[in-house]
Length: 237
Image (cartoon, rainbow, N blue to C red; front, top):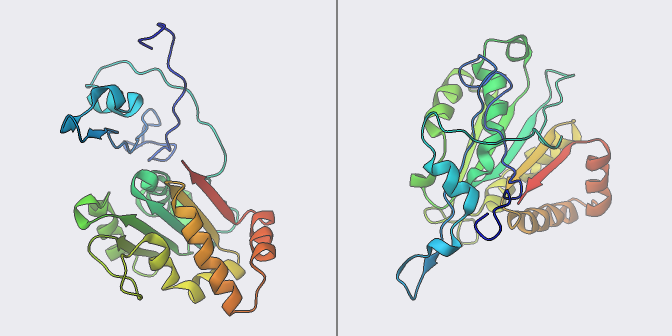
């Protein structure tokens, strides 16, 4: 740190690859990082004093640079692989896509016993501002083509799509379009994951609560049941 010369505090990033890494050697890992900058209206430019320390450091590194790392930390974003027919519902905003890239590579890309055994459905919802901001779409499309029943993909593009009320299409609006199907999957033991900005969770929970009410279900006890059965996974920041 510039102010006292001590190391910066730890920054946590979700890993965007499986244990084997993209090259299958087990010696690499991938991250999905967005450079954090602050546009100053007075300067009419990015204010370097307010830029994200770690994201800019990572984005500025060059091949061969040394990076001090620790981890992995946390056990929220893990796949329960006891039952190869388990459905996974994955909800992401922006770089929250990272852990799901690891999930999807494990289930559909890598030549492993886990991939060969998987017979469930993995359903990915990604919310971004516009189609220019879609992440890893070039990876998702071939998987969707090869596994049309096992891999589903839905995008919420807030600046390009409208929700059913005529407003912007946020991630909770896209999930709500399939509320009945998602409820049925959760009742059948599906696991639901959320990763991305913490601001998405109130909208998601409000939407699910209204769906519960329409079905005559008490939301808090329903959610508590999912958590007790470890079907509800949240990692937001």
